[in-house]
Amino acid sequence: MQTLIKNITAALFLMIGLLQLQSCKNENSADEARVSYIIPDSLLETIRIDTVKQGQLINSLTLTGQVDFNQDNVINIFPMISGKIQDIKVMLGDYVKEGEVLGVIKSGDMAQFSSALLNAETNLQLAKRTMEKTNDMYRTGLASQVDSITAAVTLDQAKAELIRAQKVIKINGGNTQGEYEVKAPISGFIVQKLVTNDQVIRSDNGNALFTISDLKNVWIWANVYESNVDNIHLGDDIIVSTLSYPGRTFKGKVDKIMQMLDPTTKAMKVRVSINNDDYALKPQMFASVTVTNTENKQALYIPSSALIFDHSQYYVLVYRGKGKAEITPVQKLNSLGQKTYLTSGVKIGDRIISSETLQIYGELNN
Image (tube, rainbow, N blue to C red; front, side, top):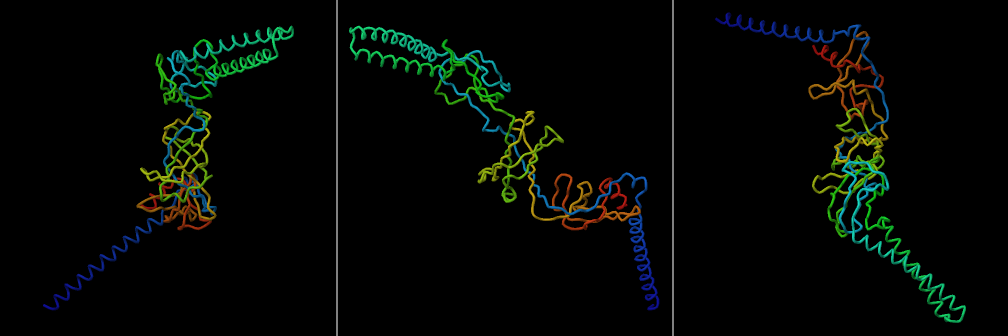
């Protein structure tokens, strides 16, 4: 009986040993198959092989932002007088030139200004004639010196009153027909219009009739959260992209940092001024804002196309020559355009495959 048990035990150990041996052979075979993949010559002729380099570290940070008017180039046109506006010539979004008439206000105030101008002109003519007559009488002894001086003072007062009336008319559009012409003070786009034809307006109303903005330069406000506040500096380079123009970028610099957090979003606002000569950027557009700045540090970098992400890990394919490549895990620091900075995994001068990487990676894994 004991002999039978021993034989059975020995047989079990033998079977376990054979299974382990077979398993090791399978693993070795898989490893050999993985290592033994050789990149075909036809593929080698088309792939790109780069080297790991070292250079100055450039940090990048991507923020959300929104296009806004350049508030330094925005003009709100308020009513100077009360009356009824008519003959509005522009619509929202129209481009207007400096001095162009936007609408006409029929106004009793303008009629009074015109009447005051006419009275001032009449009084000046009367004062001139009175002055001439008094001087003639003074020379013949029919008027005193006091009369002559009084006439001269009256003439000066008439001249001053005429100048005042002319300035009032000029300030209010220069029209002497009882109408006020609303003119564009700058060239730009009508970005706000709050009046319609035959609307009665008042000079004490706080609302603008029109708002004009020169969109050749716009502002972009980006949101910086607390964890990134220390990474933003005045003068940092900015690259802006929008959904409306895929593949196109706009460049600028950080020119204003608001030294406070928004109480609602808990984000700090930074401002970027962007040239917009072709009017591509529209106010209220959403934008992706990439901030870059250079540190006084050196770091390894590779082409971004060489990086592979799989199973929560970054990899590169290090080329060993003769069609052989190895899958090598790396630690990514950050990416900026076509460059990706690494902290470990490769060394300067390593040759890495930077095209057809997914195909080769899949073959090596198989």
